[in-house]
Structures are given as structure tokens and as C-alpha cells.
Image (cartoon, rainbow, N blue to C red):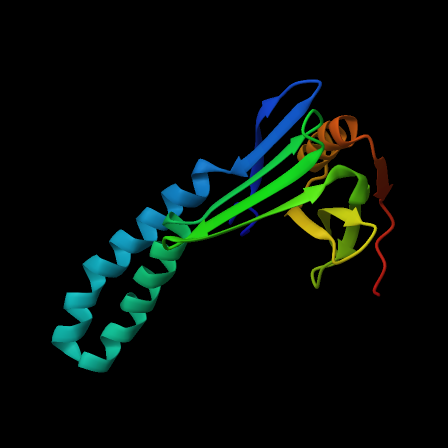
Length: 165
């Protein structure tokens, strides 16, 4: 149900470069949650001041979603993966050489309801994997993974068999 939170989409693709950014849906829902929280907070305050914490929390979560930005640039000419993130005005970025990347992986993971969710990440030779996205359907993740594998010149690994470990 919450696949859209922070999901990435391909905004630019060429034979030498792939750019992924957070989807507009994340920001739109963030602004909607913020509006709902700000609208309900005064009513809750009038009834019981402590009850205003719930809509205030909803508004805060909405503000964080509305300001969430994530950008990954796989650039073959520069030989780098540039990751930039910003949330609530706080920015961070990092740069990884493409030769440090081992593979782009899409793997099925079981959920409590018996269905699989699919997770995509970039496996590095050294360090933790770089999380890309997750979804209930694999098609969008595979297109993104194929684009990255082509530009970064790494293997594409797909494991459709869900495991509990």
C-alpha cells in the first residue's frame, strides 16, 4: 500500500547516463498529509489539547514527505554514481566510482500476507548495498535495474524465489 513513499523513477536515460529521482507522488501525498494535519489540529486542540498531537504528527510526517528529495546519477563518462538526498532542508551527498559497484539486484521477499514484494538495490564490492526501491510488482524495478546495469556495466541479478532469510 505504501510503495509510493520515496519511490524512484527514471527521469533521464541515455546510453551513457541514467538519472533517478523521487516521484512527484511522494511530494503530493506529503503536501496532502500536511494540509490534513494543519486542518485537523485546531479542532483537536479545541476538544482536548493533547489530542492535537495526532494531527500535528500527521502534519510533521507530511512535511517530511513533501520535502523528501533523492537523486541518483549513474554517469559512465564521469565513471561515478552520485547520490544526493535532501529532507526538510538538510542535504547530503556522496560519490561512488562505478568500478566499486558489483551488480544491480532485484530480489523477491515474502510478506506477512503471503505475497512477495520486490526490492532493488545496487550491490557494492566494499560497503553496504545502495537501496533503490521496492514494489509489489517487479516490472518497474526491472526496467530501472536494466538501465542502471547498461550504463554502469555491471551484472543484473534477479532472484524471483522468495526466502525467509
